[in-house]
Length: 328
Image 1 (spheres, rainbow, N blue to C red):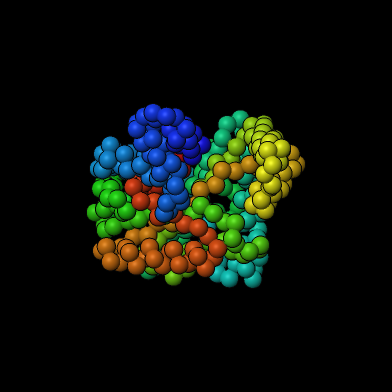
Image 2: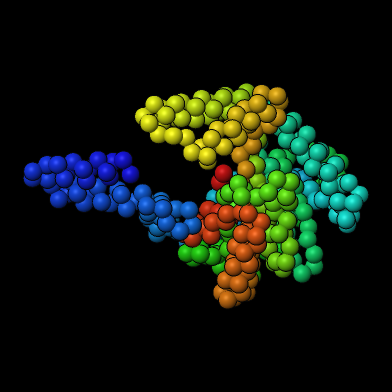
């Protein structure tokens, strides 16, 4: 935006301005315009070029490696799968709170490792019911409340009765031997109310779908540096803006408060996470897939979530939502 305004302004003040300069400034301004699905014009152009340049055929494989599986897609990763034993009405028995507390303790433990660790929780819903899987590094144990289930890894990927999954990428969906697949991503939780179950609506009412919650656990030493650097950067930007005569908006003030809270939590020993939430829907026809997509978007709106549709990025997002997140 700044470079575009500079080029256009320079062309206007020159007596014999070059048309190339005006055209370059107009293109840069057009690239900075926000468009649909959270993309600017420039970002959409990059997506289109990337989509046209890469091959649209790919293969996803999962091979057993002892008690773990090696998942090969956009990248390679090894995971062990653990299934949550559902006992019904967990909110009344208190088991859901216990499971969440144990997961939190496990994440804090992972932050003590010398490298970044990856973990993911997958809820797969079908006509037969829902199953929940926790995918971890092979050397990490899930602890109480989870039972190791290697075959569930293949089921979550979609390798129920085949050894490999061949995908054909289209602009807004993927075609497989079992039907059509579309992956969407939750990118904003800020409109949700405090204490609400953020993903509850997305896990209910969709017959053939899955919700994948991925998180990278940053090692503790690096997490403290990242949190402190973020506070310093936002504070410096705010001071520069005020010195130039701009006032701080309510959004920027709230963002600075949240970053400050994050720094305090990390300093007190909490883990710093990079979180990604993906929703995958499956259907046998385009009409059914469009209907399921609209239902996901509607449920996201009702829950205060902003969901991106992932046009032109279906294959990378499909790899991101797989157990272990190959390609992260």
